[in-house]
Image (spheres, rainbow, N blue to C red):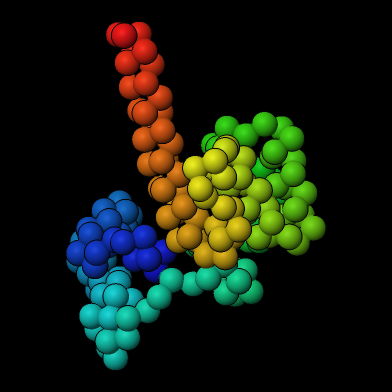
Length: 170
């Protein structure tokens, strides 16, 4: 929940999102009784009205591992090699890239595994003015850098397309 908050999801949208997910396995009434308060609390709308911030990578890595049926944590730290390996094909990685990521994670270099994953899924990011140095310090930094990358990439591709069209039309 805090990750989504850090990514800019409003409390109202968070309520809708989590209600949509949880009401697949429980009633709306059960969701409201068991989860609504916690979500509002996380946003500083209940209890002591503390506005919580998302956890950094180091806090997640050093924190308690997710229990059965829980889906949070650092995938490079809290997933075994088989599970992490099953997640990586969704990023359409080469075998070499996948093996490098798995090797870093296996050696306990979780943030290097994360940064390597970002680098291979965001090729030529440096040419767009983005560095991979920050992405492995906070999950929201990964998201933010990725959004900037795809925006700049689209702008660059559009610029090239326009230049080609202008050249062909001259």
